[in-house]
Picture: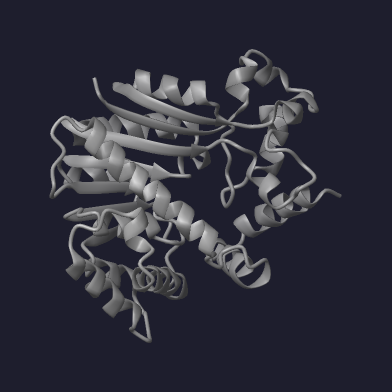
Length: 310
């Protein structure tokens, strides 16, 4: 049986268990080692953080030096919000429907930031606005025991919120910069539309929204025998067999995300794309669901979308 199918079924079984998120975390952290922070991953996230900051300055009508941020999807390693804090963000809200933060993974992130600052690597990737923020971060990295990640992040002006953004957002007010990084592909289409409608009410005419979206079949990251387009072979009903709440993939393409922006009142200012190998998509038989898409659309494996309200 293919490795990806075994993984899909194991995660589906785990998803029905009590404390499924914790079980999934410990399996990935201590069994597969997939959540151990690596240098290359950290560097890539810093580069993406710099990209967020650059595009806010480029496309924001009146970008503020003391800007606030809303990040959708905190995830396991809060590299983006800490990076934006170092770029000068005054207040950062990072929201997730599930609390993935763990003391050991936050400690890893802080140590990476501290080490890179010591080696002079951090300032090569991020426009550090205030050296005292580096000193504060390094002080936190030296703490031997991190017991409450959310409380510690508050000392970096980062507020972690565990909630449905559509229910919570009304209490926040206006936001200057809205970002997500490798998140939207894990959310159903209708829910993305609901979120975008909610975010539109939080934005002003100077606000910028940026999404970095990974459109590959994520099972191809651990099973090298399948291509990034593997999941385009299956009907919705068949894909439901493999899809699960711990590793949900919506299979939306770049054109779908563009349509969601347009229908929910967001004007796209800029897009960047990365394409996969055409030979990989030619090897599979597309399900009827995807045959109507232009091949150029299906080939896109990563998209970067910058927008503002219409």
